[in-house]
Image 1 (cartoon, protein in one colour):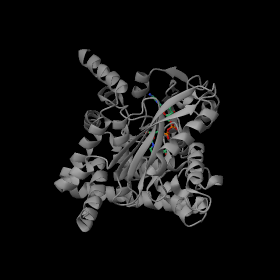
Image 2 (cartoon, rainbow, N blue to C red):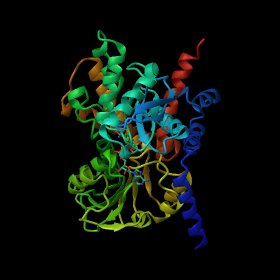
Image 3 (cartoon, rainbow, N blue to C red):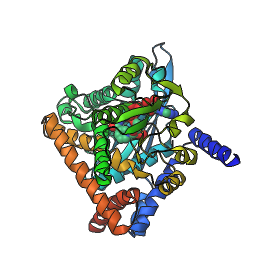
Image 4 (cartoon, rainbow, N blue to C red):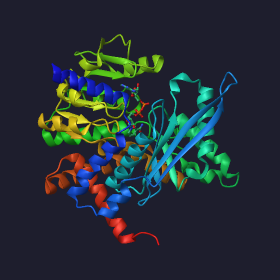
Length: 434
Ligand code: NAD
């Protein structure tokens, strides 16, 4: 009982303070750095971001009052290509979180061998409390404040929590108008995740969910596990969670529970993710959906299900949640959802983990395709995007298997190990300037 209480207190404290996220990211990377005997100088370089930009900027609200906002852009590493990573709008956004998320982007790109580095940014505010016109003004003023700290060959933002294709289109349009008439059409690739009509790629909106489902399918094939008729739960029903749920349900898997910032719901008979999507579009939350029962966060983690997809925020799986989980697989849609101590518990319970930098990489992969299309003034059809995404996900998934077998490590360490080796080789070849 006392132990249960301690774990609950730990989870509650963790949920309140996600400030140590960067330390956790470093811990995860260090395990892999040891496994690949990473050079100590390379380790030192990667243990801090290259640049940390903070901007404070005023915006005139609908009521004509001025309000000051704090924005971030952390650029972790650009050895393998321009900084790349999402922009998050969230009231708890902070520098440590951005540093961790930026570092994970470096390893994600390096893992897949796509020519990007890692960055992350955003603005500390709750977008749900603002009108569309205020969101547009905040986005445009933020982009202007960042100025040349972003750029199509320098640092390329994308959507993340609280932002979407509309946010990216406002960012692109603002940036295009900052660089001058004659070159504006050559800088569309300053952001990815745009709507298709404004220069985005087919398949980008659903890319992260698609990549996640590819990983789950490869895992199922490997284990001889039948996805048709299996059950799953999803935490977070935004871009990543909702697309993953729809795609899995198309394969016959049954959604038995989900939750978001508004509450949690469950139904052992199954929840229709399409109808739930309509409810979320209308109300902003899964709470109140008629086709399921309201449950607590604690009940959600204890639901009987074969697969769990965290697709909300980081550090949602503490020790108590890991103990409660009944699943065979955790496929991390969210970035950094799992505490290292929780992962140890899951390992002991025989729960497999497909880690974030592999599982949720479909987004950055299709962002890369979008960037290439913009640079070449091309438009790829949906089939070409889908095929290339599937091919790269499969190759990387298989590479992680090989690395795991050769080095006797888990999949998370294998993912970091592959990325770290690529970065180390490049540092060895290039040296440091001067
Ligand atoms: P989103 O804003 O579309 O959705 C976020 C979801 O999380 C919403 O349903 C929200 O209600 C829920 N949520 C927020 N706070 C919560 C809380 N305290 N408890 C429970 N649920 C909560 O964001 P998204 O783009 O789907 O991103 C989700 C995760 O996936 C994030 O970790 C993000 O970094 C990661 N990710 C996103 C992409 C992408 O392409 N969008 C790519 C890779 C990784």
